[in-house]
Structure formats: structure tokens, C-alpha cells
Amino acid sequence: MPEDRAGDPFAATRAAFALPEGLVYLDGNSLGPLPKAAKARVAAAVEAEWGGLLIRGWNEAGWIDLPARVGERIARLVGAAEGTVRAGDSTSVNLFKVLSAALALRPEGVVLSDSGNFPTDLYVAANLCRALGRELKVVAPEEVSGAVGPEVAALMLTEVDYRTGRRHDMAALTAKAHAAGALTVWDLAHSAGAFPVDLAGTGADFAVGCGYKYLNGGPGAPAFLYVAPGLQEAAAPALAGWFGHAEPFAFEPGWRPAEGIDRMLVGTPPVLSMTALDAALEVWEGVDLGAVRARSEALTRRFVEAVEARCSGIVLASPRDPAARGSQVSFRHPEGYAVMRALIERGVIGDFRAPDLMRFGFAPLYVSEADVDRAAEVLGEVLETRAWDRPEYKARAKVT
Ligand SMILES: *Cc1c(COP(=O)(O)O)cnc(C)c1O
Image 1: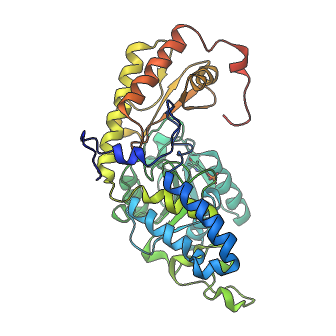
Image 2: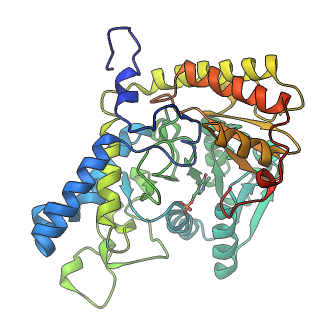
Image 3: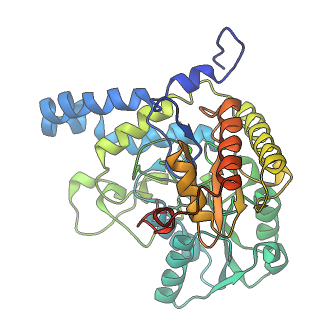
């Protein structure tokens, strides 16, 4: 792990990002900041590869290998073996692919999920189930474990709740699903890069995750998917394309799946976005995810204590025990939207989720103790002076 003279093991990773001076950025759980390496690599890819190589870039610049190369970098961060992760498409599309593959392997039974899941996951599952004549059953997050039974074909969950940060016990729920004969599909959107994930160790069957949150791949960055080694040769995704064909450039009329995980690819990868994500992942080289987790727990704990000591009228919506949450903290306030707008105008960026949640993400690679203290101080001021109580802070923008 890189260390600076003052012994802060994260000084080097913080220096790897091009963060605007004076800004406290607590929204890396929604969009990670720009890694300096990504800026340089994308500029070079545009100029030398797209501009200079043109079509030759597929072979000469290795564009064709990006889904695998980027996937292998992500594999290390989510406890996955080589050859089990590929980058590409969006999280929503990847979820469709892996859930359809899971349901093909379990032709009977329901998909079980919870009401804390991210809406896109539920939309994907509901419409896939409708197309297949299957059923999606949605229970409260605390009822998931009790609802796992022999009628469940696939247990589809997001490990960390996007609103509250509450974390499911992936190992225990996977074991329970397997004992009932079900396959598991995990969404790691708020897990990958936030703390150590152990896909291989927990025996998870399928997973998906996001490239633009804690992995810092840039707006709309490609996502990733995982298929456990033992399922790869049987996996038959409902969405097939030429990049998942055994011989894409044989141009055969029928789809023959590529060997292993590569069959999960669909179409042409977005080369510039993949290049940005590939470069962003370099920041993780040598970073110990156990240390990331320890720091995340310390930062979130420090924030909760500072906010509760100084602010009134807001209520903690995240689990109080750092071990029971991801790397974010949420507080409820009836005017949460306006409060967040006031914070953003004062250089403290978090975000808002309806109806009343203010979310603050703590990405240890670049968030410092000083950021935490400053955010709590500004939040205290905004609440105390009612600085949020202005019409322009209450008018909702298109993206919250
Ligand atoms: C952010 C997020 C997504 C985003 O999906 P996209 O297809 O990239 O828009 C999906 N699921 C969860 C749980 C998320 O947090």
C-alpha cells in the first residue's frame, strides 16, 4: 500500500484524482471522481488510437480485449478467480443477462428479491419474469432469509441498500439459497470498491456491478458481470450477440456460445469508456481492500458522531453499527432535498433520494478526515441558520 511521509496510506490514492480544490466530495457512491490516469489515457486513445490507428486499433491497440482485460482487474476487487468477470454493458443489461441465465438453469420456481432493491433491478426482473411466464416475489429486506424456500429458483439481491446503506449477509444468504436449491444473483453496485467482496469464497453464482461508482470509471462507465466457474459452460443468457459467439468473425447465422464467461458478451464494447475504466482501475493496484474497509468504517463513524453532536432535526437512516452498512451514511430530514442543495452550494457534495434521504458516500481512496469534519460543520450551519429555506433550493432538478 502506498504511503506518504506522514504515514497516511491513502495520500497516494487521493493524489491520483483530479478533484477540484476546496470541494468535499461525498458522492462517489453515485459517480466517482476523475482519476488523473484516465484523463491522460482517454486523451491518448482519442488522438493516437482512434485518430491514428482507426480500424487497426481493434488489433493493434487491443480494443478487442478490453472486456476481458478490464474484467480481470475488477475480479481482484470482488474476490473472483481469473476468467469469471467481464466488463461491458450497463448494470441493468448485465442483470438481465445473468438472471435469464440463472432462470434457464432453474426452469421451475420464483425469483425472490426485496423491496430495498434498486428499482432498475426490480424492473428488469419483473419484465423478464413476465416474458418467461415466471413470477417475481418481493419481500421486505428483513424478511428475505425467512422467505428462502424450495419454491425459489433464484435469489436476486443488491448487497448494499442504495438508500440506507444497510448490508445483507451475502455468505449466509447464499448458503441458505443453495440449501434450498436456488441460485444467487448479487448486485454489487455499492460493494465493489467499497469493501472486500468474496464472490468465490461465498459461492455466489452470478453477480453484476457498476463501473462509475466506487470504481471511478466515469459517467456511464461500463458495468461488469460474474459467473461462477462451475456454471459457465451451462450458462445460456437470453441476450446473445456476436461478441459472445465462439467465432465472431466467422459470421455464422446461428449463435454458438463462446467458451466460458465470454459467451456473456453481447455487442461492440464502448472503447473510450472502457479505456477510461481500465485506467481508473490502475489506482487500485496495491490497494488493500481490508484497509479500505477499516478506513471506511472509521470515516462513516466519525461522520455520524460529528453530525449527531452538532445537528438537530435529522435522523440517522443507516444502521448504527458500521459493520452492518456499506460505505455510505444517510440521514432523514423532511426538507432533505433543499438541505442538500444548500450543502452543494457550499462545496459539500452528497445527494438526495426521495422521499427524505440525504446520502453521503465515503470513498476511502480520496475522502479524508478533514472532509468529514468540514461536511459535518457545514451541515450543522445550514440546519442551524435554516439556510436551506429558500425557494431556489426546493425546485427539483431532473437528476437528484
Ligand atoms: C447504480 C445502480 C444501478 C445502475 O444501473 P445502470 O444500468 O448502470 O443504470 C443498478 N443497480 C443498483 C443496485 C445500483 O445502485
